[in-house]
Length: 436
Figure (cartoon, rainbow, N blue to C red):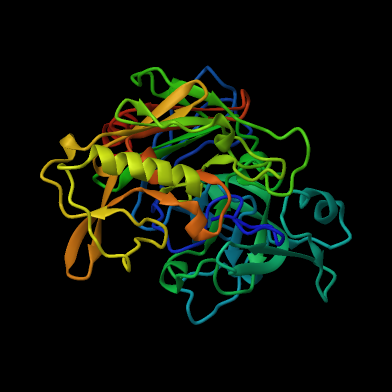
């Protein structure tokens, strides 16, 4: 769910557009953050000596939005939050509105505290937000988070105790919002209480919890998976070796570059084993910062700048002649940005894979991750899961979570890198004790 700069035409993180999002229903069991032991949060605790930080292992289910179930406040209130590596400020709906099924009531909590707009927290901790904080009529810190589809939420910056699987995180800063929606899909908005920001910004949960790393693994079939906070592949020694690609940072502030996103360097794209003949410069952010490549758990599919998407589309069409039958309907563009759809293939195994080439690592996309089964009227069609970011009005490459299914993803904040390896995520959940 990405916020977007008012001066920008694209969201800087995940995108609040009617894309499919994964639904993470997370159930946790953790230790106090003041202890040294790692917690493998499949309703049991294990000790991990590799890191002094608590490691929190969580099971989830995914469908449309990636959500975390936890409790907030004193006494605790149940909330469900969209987990988003592309957003910074965590927030909750605090005002009961007709289209909302779940809200947080701050008046029922003794641990809820507001933030004055003249406080150092309001003046300094909000520095990474796109829109500057301001004073509301009650002299409280007023924050606004806007999204690419022109929707937004706004309210008060506050502090509250968050209980993630029973372990308290006191004085967690979040937005207590009094407006209705954060996406253009009211039905999806009604299913959650808010959003949990997991990027590298000052107010993100990752920063507030001082997480050294976190990992997730999304199953492609049974809508389940695992999220591990504070730990990585060391908690799963049966994984194969991870391939790492460094996180990219800008040395100067650029108007179109999101400095707190998980940005990596895309070097090229292959169809089967054929590398697209494109200049390296098309994958490098320009002088304004436009054209960065972001790994985003909040966006379903993967989006490429128009010229790169066109080259990929042309080569894929060439290599699938006689293998796939294209839907010839110019009016049908899946999710508003994917215009390459097919009739049901005889065999997905015959479809050439697409490989994203990063600095130091490659991500191979094939089978059901490459062609997504979608409804077109009364028929089922199979759509290419790479989209044209130009059709969304964004100027960035976004690696969505659909291409991360059955891939163990690790975000290493200490070594400033992202690592991944293919695995079977439902088996990973079982080995970690999170599913039967």
